Length: 168
Image (cartoon, rainbow, N blue to C red; front, side, top):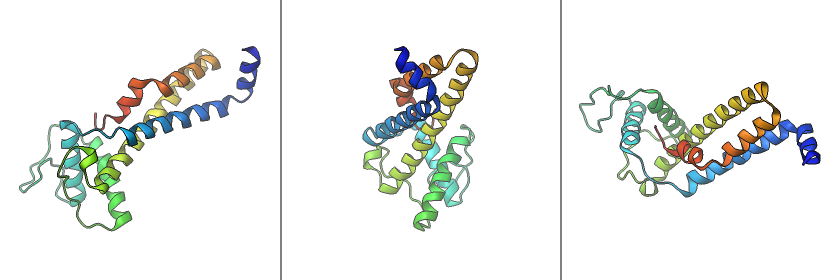
């Protein structure tokens, strides 16, 4: 093990990058192969995001009058709205309709794409947090402890699932 550790220690940054790339690919594969559905909270955020993009304000109502949405913090809705705007700009769609079903597999492809973009952003943010935490571990303990933390976090199933719980 000493010989292996000496090689890892010499290429520490490459090993960290490899672990983070593997962790990202695991999360992306999970998002693609386990689409699931949207919880009630997620549905409210998604409706509010589509309303923002369609220009009717921050509301979770799908018909007029679009009453203001007071019960949720807007940050998550705005991240979905940003993804939806990117989608509108990329494909030139004028108006985004509401999904007919909240099961992701039954949604229209553009809804699925927006949700996948948001989940990808979520996984990147989670990995950035894990990386920053590993830097703290490295500073106050050792490189071994930081790599161990990153390696376990990369494949730890609850973390892989949690990033995919959209809008929590």
